[in-house]
Length: 131
Image (cartoon, rainbow, N blue to C red):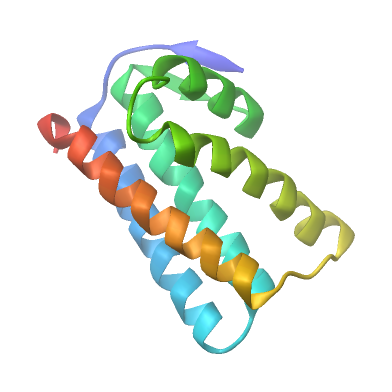
């Protein structure tokens, strides 16, 4: 579910701040070898970074899947599209960890953290006029 509204710079900034918070938690979890938790926190960082992009277009969401679908459409020809696609894969991985008790490897967690960092950096550049 997606709703069109007004562009809200405070929501954009807030989502980026939350994304940064979860990124730090992902890195901390990785350091103590809690790889499943690291991946979950990296996904949360990706999600909140994605929400900042959504807010920059004046939308709000109530579904992780709808968020990804709209962003794939709105940001097709940008540097962040690869991370939006990756986020959808991490969403599925997150569900397996969270709801089925699956684990993940240190490599999977590290890749998710790296993707989340890169997505956050590229999104900050893309949204610099809102910050």
